Image (cartoon, rainbow, N blue to C red; front, side):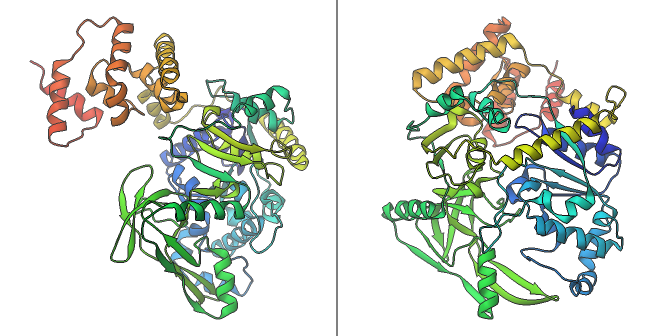
Length: 549
């Protein structure tokens, strides 16, 4: 199915499952649908199965939105207290469309619970109380493990999935420009066509060591390996240990049930220099479940964490998790929403997107584990493989069969959806127009050649010089001054410091620019930098007009 066909199906009001291989454009289509639906004044609940996935689409977790939190069960007696919750009642009845991203990572039983609550609060026996439901994800991801046992709970085998009977929109076109060996391997795994060429490609990454400057996320298959690595790294730090003990309230059985449901440890030991991961969402503080950071100090008995991506330092407060039954709090635990994160399990990595990772697949124990771990990383250059076994590149045979069923359903559905006459709303056209600059292929080749030479000279992977997306942006925007280079997406202060002059020389040389410095732009840029100010590109354009003679 084409992207435009999927968009048309969703805009026509169908409940759908949007899926496809990496690079097929699932996130792009979902974001376009959100934009288009909002332009038509549709009321959306934008959710995802994990905090990380939720931030990617500007939403919240389905657990939070649904009001169910960490509850594992509901019964008919819960209907009354749910309906007495005015906040929830208003929430469920003020939306037209429910979006759940990364739905493959949602428990089937929880999917059933959400369906039931929708029916109760919207007072309708239609699937999900009559809401249009948009599900997205990749069923080749590992399914969630039920808490307290090792059984799995596929969302597509739930009663709610069968009842909803979503239309299948399986995106079939590949929209990534680069033929990365990692993408080829993932596609082969999905098609059950892994051969010696693919084994050779991944084997070349076996034993590769990352440069010391690269901070690697370590992905392992077993919790015991993760714990051992984290403890050994913590002990290696020569700073003072701070211990944080979980506070509990409620009967022992209920507290134990609650502890199994949260990711925060009962006893947390931290030191300055410790790498940590957040296990809860706090959007106002700038972190979600899965956000990584480093302990940089302690103040008033609380850790100060430097967030990995933004370099912002925040003080972390304890957080409480509660178990409610019949509208009453039966148990509560309070702990810092942190755990050590030099290493994490492959299961926990789902929903992440990493520039690089150290991956150990030597003890992979279930089909699909290698696919999940490898698909976290953007390119093969970012994979540093510690080990691999025969299971690592296998997929569950049941998934292949179901995938073929999905493809067939999608093809059948697509035959009734024309895309040529589908006119996108004005907001879509304006959005496209704002990004209408097409990259110059000749300039792009020049930039790629420079990147390859620089990476070889410094003995580092290509992505550490510049991402493909950044090079695309440079080839499209063609900056010839420092101020315009700064405005290019993906070009940060460090990149400008290291390569700014070289990049400008490449662009100017390609374009044949004689006047190498726009003095007006340089003057504006220097003025803003001296005062620590930033302006949008629109405001900069208006300012340039005012300065014209």
